[in-house]
Image (cartoon, rainbow, N blue to C red; front, side, top):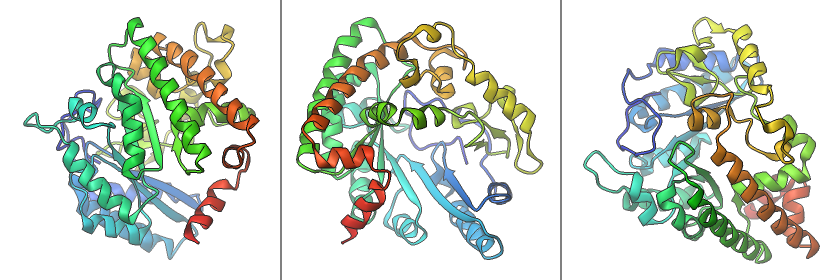
Length: 363
């Protein structure tokens, strides 16, 4: 929606120049997303999308009016840094079923290291205040956490803090564009082993939660066929739209003309879309001989571009990360499976678990 932001996070990949998205463009997005679909998901992203709050309100209202004349049902999500997240917007999200994802980098020390305002002040206290208000109304809201080499030692403590704050869904990712070095790897392994202990403790205590690095790797074994089928489908299942209406394959490509796939007013260039997908599906150099390639994240075009500048080249740090996290996740899963832990088995082997869990919590 906009490249503008009220924070200046040191690891942000967005070019903070350019125009804001207009209502005409957001309406064209709604029209295009619902043209041949019965379900369409729309995510408000930035920069900081809440800088355009009125356009978000109007876009959702327009989509709801379209639902009355079409068979398409619209679903909405926003990713925000939380500084502008007030009670009015949270109430709006509750009424409209809008999913809110909040960015918090764990502990205060880790968060304030990189997520600062224009004056160089850390944003942790304001974001945590917003998180508490959000979770009181929408307890299933996810939190997005970024790990940098200089915050790595806070990784496990940060995840534990986010769970204690009330988040149940923690999505943690390394900043692969950072200067990761070989000397960081022992600490990364140590942090994941600490997190495995936390995961096991919470599971045995029958706490319901989601921690992305382990869930994804466990799923890549339990649901190996489905996992391979749902790998990065660059430009096919999800598209990103820049403020001017240009369509791109994913959010990290916005603004790069070589990855433009049409625009919301004229439609998608399906030839370019398919060509990009085919290119990304080609096995990366060296990956064809790797024993864990079917369970590795090396196919993610956004991640590869962030780390190496090319969708065709895999970062050595990614390889190192995958070789560390996979055996830890597998050992963790094996222990819980051998113990016959009912929560773990339901969570990993029952496709209806999310619905059953939600129904149970509602009762």
